[in-house]
Image 1 (cartoon, rainbow, N blue to C red):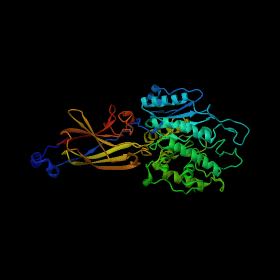
Image 2: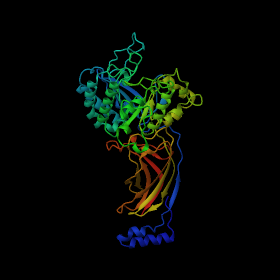
Image 3: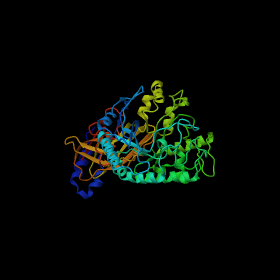
Image 4: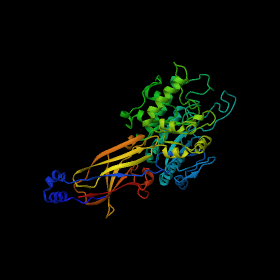
Length: 515
């Protein structure tokens, strides 16, 4: 909206044109800059947004590799039915098990690495991102042992092999970081869950020791360190258990009361800021089947009482505000609390633990209850971030060579904030020529936590900025130049009449005159 200048403002504008450029900044401040409060309407639509939501599951064996299909991945972005499920999901994330079943005692083949690159290329072309987990076995072998349904030997690989494989994968992980949302630690144990392992300590009842020893922790820490090196510093690694992070950061004797990550250290690309979580038995039992358990060490016993549960869960709640969290549900038999409110507390737990994504395929018995219980639509909308622009205070006019102040009032209705860095840009698009000028904002969208967010910035308009009328837009693109101009990878605000699907821009529904 452009206001008609008053007589006084018009005379000041004419005077400003006549003075020398050296005096322009001083006199331009006399221009009558009017500000307008623009309000927006919230949308209830469930739409795809990058790096959040229900993920689609995929797996491939190195012994029989089938490359991801671009058309199939692209279709995931539209609502689709899930087998054995009573709900549909639209997805921008694809979890991918890479099961290294034929290289447990040798190097990864060149053909595997070639096919892995093809997977990344297919995802990039389709407009989705991958969550890879590299493992050696995802099969439970039953037998005569305490667990029964799964017995040793489990089939994972020794540390030396794992470290060599991580070194082989490093170049591809670095070269394709743009299309990786995050990486799950994997490698150790069946399903890569660091539990049933032949080489890193068996944390299950199948082992007589019944706990993990110092050397087991040191070996696990060495694998984590290698993975942090193999994955670019701007990408996070997900661990299966919160205690695993504590012992990596603070050592094998770390207490359950070890300090979580805080705001001051968040998003710093340090180790503590890069280690997140995947809980593969979310809300399955009181302690999520061992997620919140003290696995002991050489000098201390294994414990899993209420104090351990509460201490580790409090740690998780605090730490998870600043790191990536996701996973899957795994059982509908033990915990009615995983139902919708008021009978359960699934939405409250998603929010308290800052979940960004969850498996669309497993466990559908649990997920179906959310559809039947009436909270599935909320969960689909609120996993990860969901930015609602409430109002904005924007200037009607500005003189080039000066600054203008903008204020955006946003509510993040999601359970979490974005976990990967991305720029925030104010765009000015000429109403006559269509030319777009981009101005970087200082705001860090990763710090737009759940709740109300106020963004106030002083934006410089260059002295050589072409005069004219400009639409104002907000752009939240991917940080990687390779996909920064792809609308599929830009964040969409949850507002009506704001999103431009062709560009990935969010219209602020306001026009400014640059003099």
